[in-house]
Image (tube, helix red, strand yellow):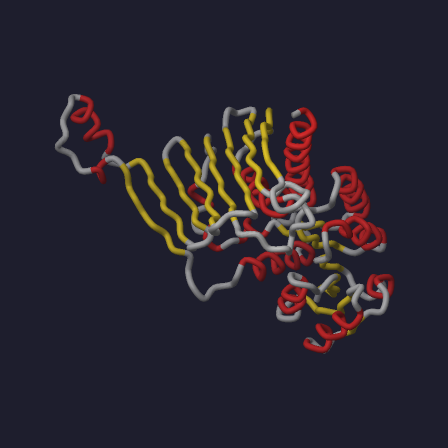
Length: 328
């Protein structure tokens, strides 16, 4: 039974506490929040301890789940690691690459696990098509939402785009060679809408757009590869999968000869996949995977290095945008 403490029980943290309280092979020991009344409220729901200080929590747990705001990630994760605790961190891993690198160094020295909350890796709709995505050469993603105050304290690149950055990097087996980006702040002093073009050493290209000032919600990512086109609609929980048909080589000579007498299904197999209803949600699977990674001493699905890599790209995108603003 992995002894877990949850740090920060606001919008996200309260759900983390609920899920840890329900996982069989772990024990939710207690809650810590800088707003003591909030910690006490959530602790009472699950009959666990409300810790007065963070230091007190670290003496009684084996792992901490940090769902506090990003600016606190480093200051909370570092003492946890130094006290021998495994760490789950909501995304992004930290505010700076240097902070992330230091956490990784401590974790490696003490043989501890860090998992970062890039939840889309566990999205049921992605899990429906993950086996079909192989070496995509062009990827296009759109993550658009109407404005809300929550999350607006950081640029949209760190709030929304980083989800797709992590997903794309998990599917493209190559390093990034060049980044181009543009973005503007409209409702906040920060970046509210951004677009980035990522070019990989293997020739793959990713075009990534994120906005928190849109009139509609849209969360889609499309993969183009040698044998298939895969369109993932996170919002409507479905996948459209087009693959080269096994019959294509039988009809291709006729088509090349000018014939129009063929069935489109002889060229491509088209399939729509709907994510199953009633199964575990992405957050539950994500936190269960963290518990299993610790208990079974295996690499987390989204380890600290993956989280740091996504952060590094996101920060480069932000630097490029800020440089353009200064230049023009």
